[in-house]
Image: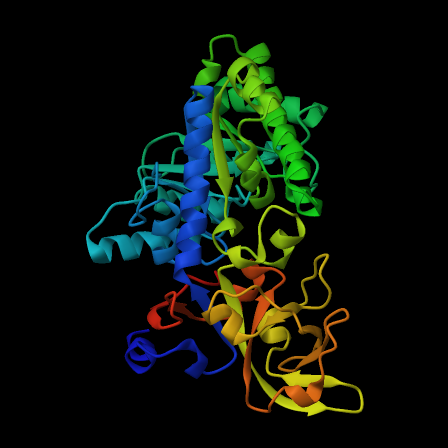
Length: 429
C-alpha cells in the first residue's frame, strides 16, 4: 500500500475516493487502552491474575493487532502477547509481518474454528513451528480421535486445546451440563488422547449478548460466561483428581460482555472471581477496538466510540420521494442489521472532523450491489434538496467486522482527519 500512502498521505480524508473505509486512529487507540486497563483494574480489585487475548478478526491487520496488545499506546496499564485468529492465513500474515520488522510480539495464537480434521491439522502442525504456543478448539469426540491419530504437531509439543463451551449462543461448542460434554472431557483426559493432547482450558463466547440493551444486561451475560466455564473446569476436577485446576485457563468474552468490565466493582463479579473460580480467568474480545451500530445498540458504548466508518458520495437525489442515491451499496455496507434501521447511519463530515455531537439526518435504508438509498432518519426533517450531488458523508456501519471485509485496505487518519497510514488486512483464506 506504499503507492496509496504516497498518493494520499498528508491529505484530508474528504479528498479520498469512495467508497473507502476510514479508521480514526485516536479512537481506535482509546478503545484498546480502555479494554486493557479495565482488565488490569479487575485483576487489581480481585487480587487474581487475569489474562487478555485479543481477537483480531475485525480488522485482520498487524498494526491493529499490536495496538490491541497494548504496544505503542501510552498509559496502557498492561500488555498482552496472546491473540485469537479466525483463519490460519491471519496467523501466518501476522507472523510474516513480525519477522519482516524483526520483532516478536505474539507468543500465543488461538485458532478459533473447531476444525480438527486431517487437512486442517496439517496446516496447524506447520503453524505450530512458528509460535511459542498454539491453541486449538475441540467440541466433538472425532476431533480428539483425529488428534490422537495425527500425533504430535511439528513443534513436537502436545496439542494444546480449549474445549468450546456453548453457554447459550448455539453457534459452536457444547453445553457443559450435557452428556456429550462429559464424554468429551473424559475422552480428552483418556490415556490414548493425553499422549498427544493437553487440556489447556475452556472457552465461551456469549454471542447472544448482542441482544443487550444496557451495560447491566451485558454484565449479566458476563457472569453467565464465567459460571459456564467454571462449571466445566469443576467437571474436570470430578473426573481427574490429579489435575491442578488452577492451571486451566477459563476464557470468556464478547465485546458487550467485555465492555461491561466497566462495572468491575460489582459485588457479584468480585465474589465469583475471588471465591468460586477454580481456574485462571482470561478475557477475549475483538470488535471493541472498532465498534459499530450493533455495539451501540447494546448500550455499552457511545456513538463517538465507533472508530471506523465508510466514506461515501452522493450521486443523485429524487425530490418526489425525498431519497438520495449514494455509492454505499451492499458491497461496502453488507446487509447486517441491528436495533438501528437500515444498513448504516449517516454522519456529516464536519461532525467527524470537529468532534461534534452526531446529528443523524439520513440513514441507508436499502442497498443494491453498488447503490445505497438514503432516507430521512426518524423525524429529522431532512430534505434531499439540501444534499449537493458530489458531496460526501460518513456512514457508521451496522457490523464493522463484516464491512471491513469488503475493503482491501483501510485509510488511517489522525484527529484532524489527515491520512497518516494505510493498513492492509490479511483477508480471505
